[in-house]
Image (cartoon, rainbow, N blue to C red; front, side, top):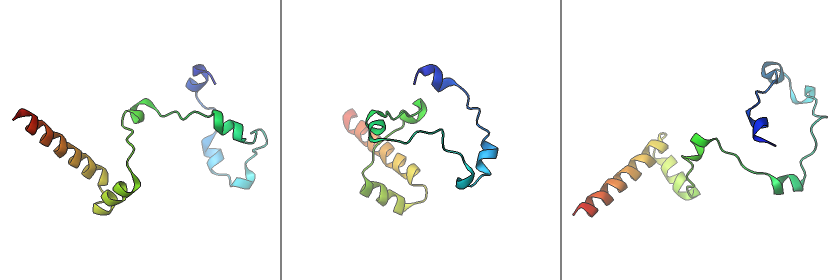
Length: 92
């Protein structure tokens, strides 16, 4: 797929499609996904999201989620405190 194809606007009638159930949707023009497809596939993350992509180990994420519904804010707060602490120790 070229970059040109990625910029095209979809002509899909999403309202009509969303009103259909699975049995009403015609999938006949979609080829099956083979193992070869997945071996060649590339994950594309939009640039703003890619800049904020951080891999957090499952147990750490579970702990933060258990602390607060605002776990992302809590993670940022902990990281900010860590940075401030590191900066203060460097200044001494």
